[in-house]
Image (cartoon, rainbow, N blue to C red):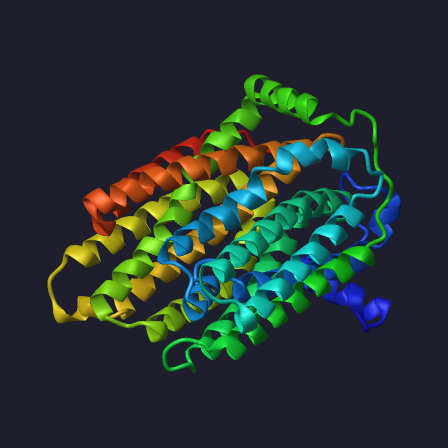
Length: 437
């Protein structure tokens, strides 16, 4: 951000492969003028958001927090559902509210600030929280964090659609994922330095850095020069719900996209079970988890720019290939679990499968994000994103319950085979989507 406009423009052109930074589609002329500057504001904002996400991970850091303060074990099982569905489910209901705002970046700013406050609360609980009361307060802070995340998510995509041109958005998200992967790598390396688990002070520091990351995210959002958008058609909660259901019923492309996106949840659902297999076989505790975080960071850092460039060419093909890759990763993980031999009793083979699944999950996320932003017009993008995320949040709760029950009955390895079938269905569904680029 401190660089001159010329060097910033040149760096933008190098990152995007665009020899003319004024080459714009579907955004206002004023936004086109500032596209290089906005590109880097979005990039740094995404870095702050990803750093905060990793250091407050409901899959890693928050379970340790509940363990350190002596919270009941059943509370750990609520962390991931609250974190994910809490961010997705309310989005349809705030879409009408956001639409009434000519500049949606301030909704993004409020969401980032609220997430920072929630992270500060979690950091304080790491120092003073105790027992069930402390655990309940952690869950309450996580609810606030998740709802604020949903607020930021829908506003972020809407602002991106107004400030970054078509065929540049996938590239932006790809580089964002690459930089964020490097941050994840660093976080994993730091966690591997702890012998068993971080103490109260270490957890408080991690969560304090997460709060700083969300504050940076909000600051970058505030500096974006957003052209006022249309405010006609703002809906009440009931009207937004009815309109959303009508679009889901009547818009074939949108309905088909959501089916493909729902099936692609197989890549996300498979990740914790591969990690679980690695922990069971290797007996590794924090060291094994640290290895998986490092692997995740490397995979995301290397894969995101490649997926991003491909998504700008055809996000449909990226979604299809991600489904095929997820199926291969799930089958490979199941095969390793069933194979005899001492080499399967270490975390290494599962870490390799985990890396593959992170790569394809990155592709699935970039593909579906690029697809919906490109598919929707500027007037209905916020509603489409909100409806899709709400649908996915409901589906995640349902699938999470079903998958958890099946895992208890069948075991992780057999479950991976079922998720592979689901991923293949996602690939078939994505292949039949219309092109939107």
